[in-house]
Each structure stands twice: as structure tokens, then as C-alpha cells.
Image (tube, rainbow, N blue to C red):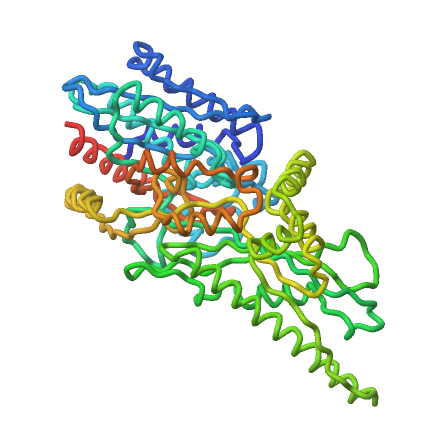
Length: 541
């Protein structure tokens, strides 16, 4: 039977426009805190509701956690239920933007539009709730809140504990969960907790058209943001063949890397999605008739298990190929034009450099550059509010000058965010066996079919609960991440201390991050709660 309370709570959460980096992120945290504090158990135990604002956060966003301590038998074992409370923006809703966070009004408006057949079918079925955040992941949060309330009424039957954690800032920098690690450690010490399993309810979706099987993930994909700074050789457009256009190189990198499955990472038969370009631009500050002397491009790069050495090797090879192809194209086009115009032709020859940030830094350091020089530049850009991805551009420019490199060059570096990859391995695989038994019971009861995969593919706060990267890979990443301690300080040692096995159950829906985002009502508010209840019974009763 569909849990109507969870469905109505989802609508209330969607009504709060909590787009990332807006005041709504604070408002939804206040709503969740108020909801939890109204539960009779937490009226008796107000100290077990933990609310903490993010550090130096102008929006006063907050982590909201609540600890339910079982009373049947006092035990350390603790299940962690965690979810994020922010959403992506609503601009793509266009004329429907006023209804983006009002599910009933949105669905009424959608009924009068020309929709894709599958969207129309889902809308008219009555089995889907539309709206920003309905799928990613306010329905998942609502289920956690509903289950928490249920279990508070059964606390006398629990031998163990449930900690729920609702975190902001997941949709870009994961700041909420990262700062929430302090709270997890404090609670572990104060209440002598043992975190045996973390469950996220981030959205799951069909893996292909017509897919009806629900996917449970026993880990999460890693994410890197490789950035390429390109130094070219400018020229007047009236002498266009005499330059080395940085924009052409940036375009070549996009053509070489974007959506190229040669960069997909494989682990035990599972493959990451290939890289996607997230930004490409030249760095000209204004219009003129000079070709671009600088350009910049960065990619989303998913990781399952590859080492940083392997990843950097692939990216540097791609950059070398692009530079060679760019020079060949300049000469090919110059030869064609010379033949067309009757001019003499001679190939252009340009020396060029391809290197990692670490390699550039070593050259500049040998010429007298210091870490203090770099740090001051990074802090200056932070004060200006420069985007964290682009702050290192100033550092790379400075290092190229200090190193005396004036020829065309491509410098590879990494920027925020960095999301560690993890999956259940070794002894942790026993958890998969246990969950399989639970899932089989749910399947028998509901008729749903399930599959297990090792890596949640859509990025997750679970990345910061457990880390599988080797020390060597982490060191290589740090060496090629300009200003990492200032721009994106990941508490690696803390993550390793906590080392919480993390899985994703998930609300089920379609089109997350699209204006047709929607959550499936029968699965999310009937099957998913049953899955969580059986998990609690298995571990805590």
C-alpha cells in the first residue's frame, strides 16, 4: 500500500525551492529540523537532534541529523541514512518555471502541452509525481523521514541505532556531507556508535528504454575534473596562418575526449560513462581581430578503479595528439590557401610543450618560484570570488612566465570537486549477500525485480564516507591540484577513519535534472519503505 504520508511530505519538500546556492537550502533545513523535533521521541530526547551551520556560509545552510537509539538492547551497531536537500536550478522549465516546485499545478499545466509519448503516458497514468527535486531526491528524503518517524514508535523493538543525516550543497561541491563528517565522528565517540552501513536514497532510474528492473548500488563512482590551460601564439587575422590558435586546440581536446569511451574506466565488468565537456572558452577579455592566445577547457571524468598515473597518462597523450593534429592542420590549410592564391608555401614549425601542473611547478621552482608565491595568488583570487575551477589559471600563467615558457603549451591540472570512488570489497562483500536476501524477500512480496551494480553512476555524497584510492594516486592528484588545501580540502584521513560501507537504495524516477523530472509513486512510497523496514529488521532487531 502506498504510504500517503510520505507522498504528501514529498510535495511539501518540493514546495520549498531549495536550488543549490539559494536561501531555499537554509529553508529546507529549517523545515526538516522542525519536522523531526515534532516527533514525540525527539521531544523526549532533544539533544539527539543535531543541527550545525556550515562554516563561513553566507546562506546559513545547515546539516540536520537525528539519532534514534534502540531500547530493546543497547548495542553499538548503527545504520546511517543520508540524503541531500538541494536541487539543481529551474531555468529549463521556461514558461513553466512558476510551477516547477508546485507538483499539482505543474502536472495540470503539463497536461495541456505537446509532450514526448513516454512523458505523456507517465503523466496520464497517475503513477508519477512531477516537479523539481521530486526524483532527485526529495522523495528519498521524505521516505527517510517517514521511516524515522515509524521507528521512533517502535524504539522498544530495536537493538541498535538509526542516524539520519540531511545535507545541503550536494549538487556542486558536497560541502554539507564533508563538514558533516565531524558530526559523525563526534556522535560515534559520544554514543559509542559503530557505523555498519550507510544507505543513500538518491534516485535510481531505468538504465535503458523499457527497463523495468530496479538497480541497487553497492558503491559510488568517483569523479575528477581535469582542466586544460592552453597557451597559444596569437596573430592578426590578416596573417592567420602565422599563429597557433589556442581555441583550435581547446576544440581539438573536446573532439578527442568528449564522449569517448576509450576513456571509460572498467572494474569487474562495469564501465563508467565517458568524459563529458563541462566548459570550454577562450580567455580573451574583449573583442579584437587577434586570434586567441589562451583557452581553457575542463571535463567531467568518472572513475571506478583506475590509478591517477593511468588517467594522467591518457589525458597527456590526448593533448599531445591534439597539438600534433593542430600543427598538421595549420600547414595543410596554409598549403591549400597558398595553392589557391598562387603564393609560395613553406610549412610552419612550432616547438610546443605538453605537461602536467606538477612538471611545470618543478621547472618554475628550480628557477626560484616558491609555494608562498602560489598561495598568495590563490588567496587573492578567492577573495575576488573567482570560480574555483579558474583560480589555478592565474597560477599556471605565473608559473609559465617564471619557467620562461613562451611557446605554445598545454598544462593539465585538476580542480574541484574531487569525489572519491568506493565499492564493497573483500569482507565488505558479506553486506551484499545480506542485502540480496533482504531484496529477495521484497521481490517475493511485491513482484519487483532487482539488479545489483557496484557503482552508483550519478555522483553521490557517499563518496565521502569511504575511499578506495591508493596513497600513490592521492599523492599524484594532490601534486596536480593547484591549491587543493585552500580550494577543496578533502579530509582523507577522516574518511579513512570512518570507513563506512555505503550503498544506494534510491527513490525511482525519470529525467532527473530535466524539466520533465518525475518520481514513480508506487515504487518509491510502497516498495522502497518496505526495503528499508526489512533492512532495519535484519540489522537492528
